[in-house]
Length: 349
Image (cartoon, rainbow, N blue to C red; front, side, top):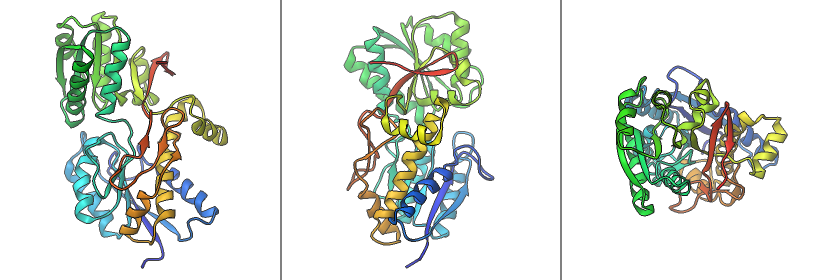
């Protein structure tokens, strides 16, 4: 039995070293907190592997990075963070029998060994989008969506919910998830005469869609999935000004409020803090509750994590897993917000 808990961290957004998506500081923070309380007594070592996955990289990079961690005898893996890559990693977790926590939006990337901290949802977000449009009075919607597993999955569930609500999808146009221009797709979508406009995808192609829509002069309501989270970096928020989107944090969440106060965090740092806190807490609590320092011990330990207050989602959202329950967030964990003059504003019911 090893004396050290070796935790693998798989970064699927960088290929050489720490970069976007590195959550190690948050993992260490929560492990140290439980260590200080005597709930984690063994040393915890974080082992890193990097593989630039889809859409910019390859599936092979994810497979290689995952195997690197397996070969280093980790008992738990954290990552990937992008839905397409989580789908690649899920069968790898089953084959290696290593408990893994992805923080992505792919509900299908769950299994006996693959746990998920939902950072959005390809299924639930589309439901939220359709219901918001229906409440807003839209009846005819046009959709531009990434031609990828993320985009097509979102579209399927948007179609399903639209049919239930009596919304008509009057036009749809697919776009490369790495597109730099979207004039053709936006023109085709507007050709259906919509009174609501939707973008679905990873978000790299969202700015060209927003720019093309602005140039068209169309002024109706526009909404996107959690691709809008990219507004916390660069000029995305300015380009997508006025767009409603699905977020993961609420101004009214008391766990997040306390975390921000404790760490002196600004509003623009709230989302990253909420994700980091929740992911770190799941890892730390899984280790603390493990019956032994083994892969099976960590799998069972994660299943014992239940009913913890989440920093993500609306007030009352809970964190936890269970037997055959691999989705960590329970409750109203998706929050509708809007980019207004570079600021994210929570949108009421």
